[in-house]
Length: 278
Image (cartoon, rainbow, N blue to C red):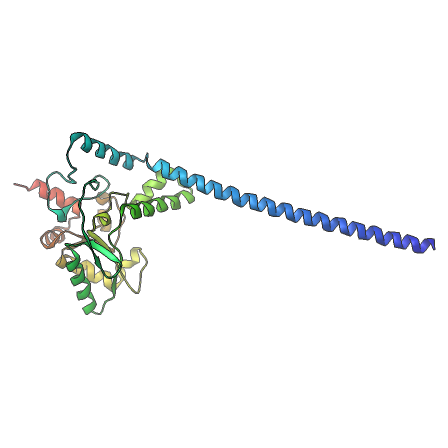
């Protein structure tokens, strides 16, 4: 009887130990889950904090400050901003990091290709260019056209966040972002004079876009419709924008022809006109 009792007691002890081990493991798993949940919450809060910090600091960005300073100066002078002091042709409005869109800029857009819009004065030329390209068996599609200020802000801020996640400093993230997405109120898309066109077969916005038949045709013939390739790779130091073999800007037939002959980007052409103005 004693031997049987010892065996029974031993089994009970083993069972108790197993139970304790199971309970310990369950508690361990629960603690691990709680730690993971806390970690996720911490990361979310950190991202949110970084986002808030990004947005608030953007207001202090050198380019943004420059915009605010120009606006205040214009307000104090009691006159409207002229994007450029000499050239008044609406087709030649120079918009870049140093020339912002005036607060009182008047714009009337018209729909094109379904969901897209552009300045109503250039819509017919866009249609003609796209139709002629399609007659050549090509497949051009508009991937971006007129943008509101709010839409441009979202694009820019998202690009800044992208670089922040890569480990860039705030200042460096904003600088790098501005080479790919123009700072709000400095984008030609915001005045409806620029369109981004890609091949339906290849819609990635990278350097390979220039290798498509669509871009080869457009780069060669866009000036016949009053457009120019706005950001050529060899003009990056002047435009301060990376090469975009899909971004076309309307300048008018006469101006486009001269710019092509002289290999001018818009900044160079404006200076050329100023120097040769009677």
